[in-house]
Image (cartoon, rainbow, N blue to C red; front, side):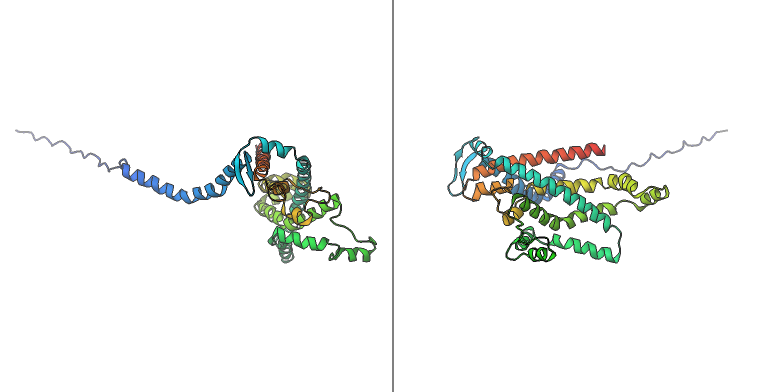
Length: 317
């Protein structure tokens, strides 16, 4: 009797799908070239509009570079010595810092107050938002010319109103004294930029979830406790952005003072940027000294912004 043995089961090895093999060298090169082509417009934009001007200013700051005669060779550090020994160097820095402190405090407080005022959407508050934002659509030079006419003794509508109210018997000189010129210019800047900073902070306020305010209301928190414990901490990114923009813009103030006061009276309202302009185009015609002062201002701006970022970052942590 013969025994029949069953054939061994046939096992099929699992089919292996061909995986992606190494990309051919030509394909990797093409992908790399495509990436560079995508980045090329941005690189050209940054190179021509940011890096090249900075390198040119650095070169001019170390050269005897006049407006009409051009580059006359290296003279480092003569430009920096002449700029720092200028009789308006210290006074322009102090005045710029004073103006920056006043404008920043007023704009931040007023911008936050207006943002809180128009935070809720109603028909009246929508009209109020638009009315406050209208001055922001006006150019700074145009706004300065408008206020120059308003402050002028010949065309100002304020003097007849003040005399009619009995506040004064004579014409008020809005730009005649150093303090009057400073505060008149600050009034222009607050009128021009309050709506802009209101908008920045309003965007931050509207990003705060309403559930947080509802929970605080249920817990019996007062308005001040809610503002201090919820609104301010959650609004910190918007406040940081507004603060950096406000400080940087105030340190670079030029248009408003050039149009309203031209540095007067008695050279009391010369800002640092106006001093740069005077060195380059107004009598001095020395681009090397103007570039040296620009380098100093650039270094100060980088330092101030770095300190702001560090301080805000440490507070967040």
